[in-house]
Image (cartoon, rainbow over all chains, first blue to last red; front, side, top):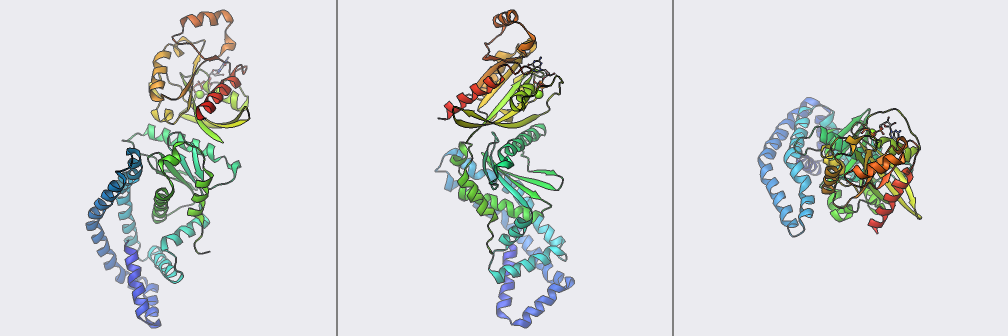
Length: 268
Length: 164
Ligand SMILES: Nc1nc2c(ncn2[C@@H]2O[C@H](COP(=O)(O)OP(=O)(O)OP(=O)(O)O)[C@@H](O)[C@H]2O)c(=O)[nH]1
Ligand SMILES: [Mg+2]
């Protein structure tokens, strides 16, 4: 999205100019006011473009997925569009705007500074920026990831190999809490998205016949949460199908995939 | 290992939680603590050398089954419907309740269970047989443990049969 373009621009500058240019850039980065001056117009312009372009792009995505999936069964189709209907329309849009807003609001603070530093690092080390943020998060705070069959609450996959952890029981309990909460506060099929206790957060991402739970120890930013959600979507598209989930039985193979997809460190 | 969701349902105070506790922990308490929402626990059964993991949902009692949130029924493989042999009001709605459950879960295994048989004698049971709207599958006592293992074991056999 926009920071990609931003980093492209920065990279271009870096490649064209010599070390002095880098130094100049560094100076700007070290001075919040200067940085602000440079960044604000760019960010605001991006926000405006994004607002304008979004409905157009969104329509394209939906149409593409529907045409790809129409050949398949109705349930396959539901599985495919479920996260998009629910998330893209309501939450995803809101989240994207919130992210932009956050960045603008905090343009002088840690937020932007950190992002630009990570941008540099990813440029020099050739690691995708999202990947890096995810890794930082992984190494410190994600405890476990579950994939659970939606209604039965049966565990399909988990990143935890230790049977003593009783992940299948936890999966049942979380599903019961989810059902209870959704029933108690029923609002047009809205789904529970986060359970918080103490310093723990359970992030829930629902699909048509299954849902993910990411157990996070500590606070995460909305950007980090967006990265996780995107990872879940990508993992679903790559590894999960209705058939895989239908039996409601635990899959070792899927668990291994889940673990390597979320926890493998691409830098190492 | 095969995992299945099993629910305990029925009117309030019939002994669902007591059956659950007796089966899982071989415990019984006279105290009545009504269940709020739902409680989940798990037990691994060994049936003829095959392991089956039962994820058991103990649901808050409702006077009529159509009051139970639909989401509790979804994805369930077996339903244990419990009534209290000493309280007529807990089996008066039996036919409607079972019809509702069958509608919710056409392929689910159902067991109709009369609990608290330790409180009644054989004559009473004979009379109950004449008056109950639908026949029961098993009579149990969560207090003495009578037929409790049997109940879950029978369901386990049916679940495994269904799976193969
Ligand atoms: N004598 C006797 N008492 C029982 C038996 N089973 C349960 N009770 C008593 O009946 C009361 C209610 O039992 P629970 O197991 O809490 O009933 P429940 O169906 O879970 O009730 P809700 O959660 O309110 O729906 C308690 O006081 C139990 O001690 C039984 O087999 N024999
Ligand atoms: Mg109870």
